[in-house]
Length: 142
Image 1: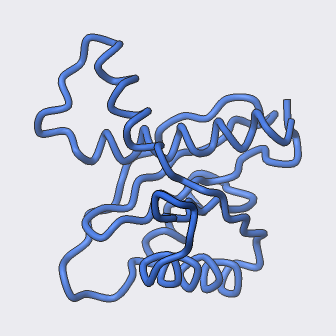
Image 2: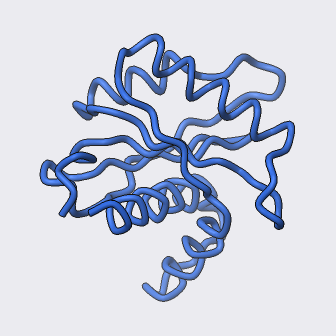
């Protein structure tokens, strides 16, 4: 149990979609909370992430950091950090960054293990990846 991360919203920020997940009120279980589709060339959907956070009564953010295979930061990592920093500035809520490598593959595996098809469900996969990220945060700091 990690009460410090209770009601934190995980953000799996991708180029096409933003996967979301929310922690329960005692910081024990992460659940997928949908996704936001992004349009190419448009600004980051920070206002929409903030709306979702408010609707879910989020008390902070866990933002997945897309590192390369060696654990190094990339140009995309810098963009994700910028989005996370902006969320923190605009909401006055805490933002924590966490390595998100392998969350998508874990998400795909989880959905397949539940006898589900991932075909045509990229948004669900992204939301589950956010849940995997958040559950990891809950487990390691709990």
